[in-house]
Length: 243
Image (cartoon, rainbow, N blue to C red; front, top):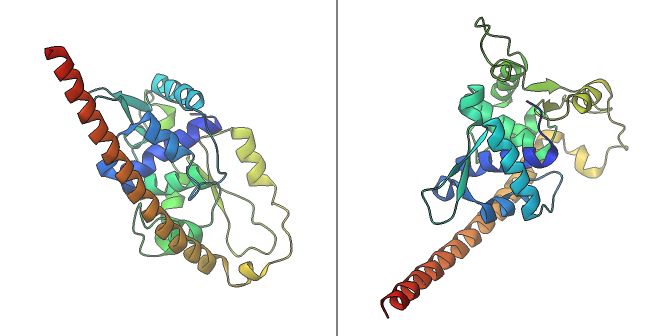
């Protein structure tokens, strides 16, 4: 399974919203575009167009990873990755964070996972990563490779870093190998880095959680207004038909 950056962002956004805001899931196309282009909890921040998201959805549908839900006024979309890859709740949460924010340390993943899964400690995150990295082929020769291949890889440690970062393997294999083999060149530690990677990640997560809570509340208000306008439009159409 090899996905391009837009497909990865679409898939990660669907997974996140399914877990974090199940009341608004599956997602309409407009909601999905907003989720993909979110300014918080995304690295890098993107500005995807409607056409780009539509093309990514079409490709993911062909792979069987995303399915449309057509029992609503507006078509909505849901992912099937957890079923396809036979993932546990903690595993899909970690994979979602790696899809949306790129390579991260176990400490960063634990601090940022609160809205997706509650880990007891870094050791539990580490165990989850090890399971995702050590998946082995099933005894059944007819099993799909995607259900058994490793999904994450540990990267070379950055100079001065205390923890190794992990990256997902759903994107470009060549890029993943390059990240794994070549430690990134980093600048001398800043004041923010001096407080420690885990503490910094926890601080970032708290700030993001507050921002996202306001962001989600605003989205819900807009969704309610849209539903009200749609109801008024339906009423006007019904009255016009009777006239």
